[in-house]
Amino acid sequence: MNLNYIEPIYLARYLEVMRDRLPSQFLISRSVKVDFNKDPSLPELWGLHDDAMKSLRERIERVSSMHDLSPPAASSLLDLKVTIANMMLENCNFCERRCGADRKHKKTGYCKIDAVSRYSAEFLHQGEEPELVPSHTIFFTGCNFRCVYCQNWDISQSPRSGTPILSQELARIITLRREYGSRNVNFVTPTPHTHTILKILNALKVNVPVVWNTNMYYSKEVAELLEGVVDVYLGDMRYGNDDCAKKYSDVPDYWNVVMRNFMTAYTGGEILLRQLVLPGHLDCCTAPIVKWVKENIPNVRFNLMFQYRPTYRAYEHPEINRSLMPVEVQKALDIVREAGLEDVLI
Ligand code: SF4
Image 1 (spheres, rainbow, N blue to C red):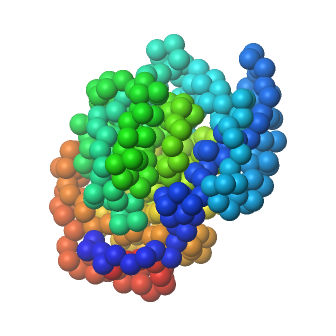
Image 2: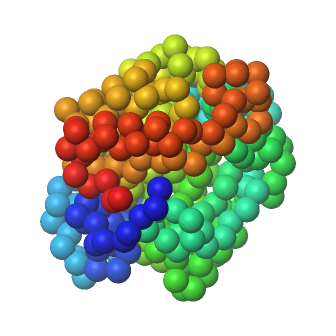
């Protein structure tokens, strides 16, 4: 979409963090003290997490400048989140596929990613939404979706490719990128790498907004871990029904999971919502998505995207093996305008 940049009216807290006037949520989590012993059960840890999250929410409300940020606790809520994610890895339910794979011991589930996270590239991205650029974008390898038209299929379907991540090293790179002008750190396809990203953030000393660049198909448990860590959910809302999601991305129960996670993100962070318009899918996908957003989460930055190209295995589906027609672009714009989603920048 051709955008004429205007100062956004949403993502207000993000902009304050970006300008170093407010701390990122992960820094506040690191200031919340939580005592836990070294050999706890997962249910015990979740109990502690629930209690600590109440303190965190109060603290986020109270913090009105960087000066209000307390020093890191010796044993913190962020430490607790890292510990929980690490335990979840033994019976993986990071996303709603809930494979139960013991990734800690080299087993893999649907995404074929073991305990080691890898990235294929990291750089200051100039092609994201205007509010985000330059965005320090880190592309993880592997994915829990199988989109037949994936533009990054060489990365998403090759989980063993890329550079293995050392959390301290990536924290150092994020710090350098921030010093060179990044507005945020943008984790792409992050869900299967939740354990690694939490560790990276726990090693990070610099204030930087955290962007979770996601298909929104994470589990309820991961949603709880992300609250108090993620500043902006850069979330795809791709399909308006389960049949299209199953057919083109091999994803079950898409609508319920993704809508639930958007609702949770709406209360715990800020949302930049992307709707990639698919050819021939305006009535079944774009229209119901726009309607749902308007009725349920109207105060989001909504980005209608027209860059669909038939790549990868799109040729197997003749109905989407083409680019969008101008009439479809116009119709999608009309759908959004008629719904009154006012923050579409056109
Ligand atoms: S991240 Fe999702 S797809 Fe991958 S092993 Fe865990 S539950 Fe399965």
